[in-house]
Length: 274
Ligand code: R5P
Image 1 (cartoon, rainbow, N blue to C red):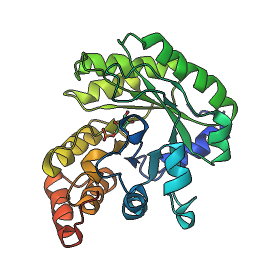
Image 2: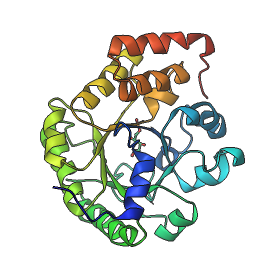
Image 3: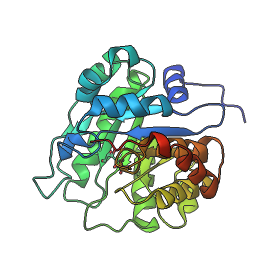
């Protein structure tokens, strides 16, 4: 059945985040300093952005990074997914104690394509973080701004299908227009549990190019619209090779072996980011 009602603002922004021609996206996550402070690979964030921004479809980052680290001539060249929740740091063990930190008006003023809110399902701050999400959705929908729900996983939680599908489904029911979660076995079941809401895979800690590429490949094959990946790209010794390899998997349907060839082909330009 044809849906005759389209929320134009939301759809227009979603089309900026997820390429309509293949319904896929490579989002570059560089929001980590919001709770980690100085982060390896992001210490000179302007340099990281200048190197990698041309190869992503959307930049997931923070207000401070948009203001201070995106070169003026790059502004507006890629859609921004703005992190709008925070309020904690790695100096405090319980990271779930977040609130909304950036207003929807600020996100509109900054010409963002979407806003991202973390939820910590099963944590002591579960209710607050779900309400952070629903409050932001209530406001953002008025502005035609899609909300990405980020399923943050506390140390006590298992990164398995049971937990991640549970958390992701709660985000969908809250009204998130997109869900970001970690990869797990039987990822296709998580995608089905959230359908038709698009799901992007978070990368997690830096591992190795073959492992990260394989994980992105499996996620996309399972039905994810793409990735929202950070450390496995910007902390790699060949960040340009990584982002191009991930693009090959996401947009060109390359298999992991072919993507590794893309990675290796950039070895000459390899330059580890500080
Ligand atoms: C975590 O809360 C942040 O949103 C990160 O952007 C997210 O974890 C994705 O980055 P990474 O691929 O480094 O895990």
